[in-house]
Length: 238
Ligand code: PGA
Image (cartoon, rainbow, N blue to C red; front, top):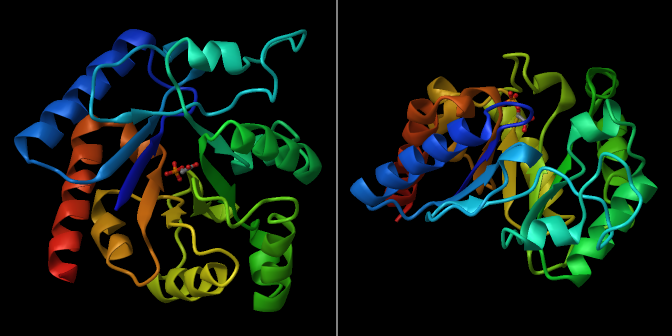
């Protein structure tokens, strides 16, 4: 299973270091076999000696250059970062990234062989408009994206479930994951208000290959519990 933490604009460099250390210690002590990804804030990117994979929440599709406020490939390479989050709803909706730009970014990092966690998901009005309209909306987020890329992970994150405490029903998650698996056979994560109380159930669903966790991942104990659920669910599956 893939258990990923999107730390967003939280945790300083020092806090992130402690966080990553706590995760590593947990994983060693419990001999966890989960693929754990952590996306820290930009200023917390660093060299971490750990069995946790560190990824970037964002970068501009450039080696370097005049893109005020952005970081480029040079800055990722400095810390050996080869994993990136692309298409997160906060970048689409708050930072105004278009599908065209997202696809350009995807192509750039794909050509460099990055592991890409690509996010898709619908806002509430699209969900309420019915399944067909919702799927049409999500399909547009696959435009320009190489769904066969071997280093791709997709995260389905309904916008209305992110940071709100609301989640789709387990049946709804299973249903949409089944639909999305027809678009790409890449591992498919669920994200949006995943927490200790629902992570195990979500991880147990068919076509759910992992979780992408925001708020609840900020507490290392909670996130470690979720890593543990990944191990339990995997054992139950065999
Ligand atoms: P959340 O965020 O867990 O706080 O809902 C998930 C995400 O944005 O990836």
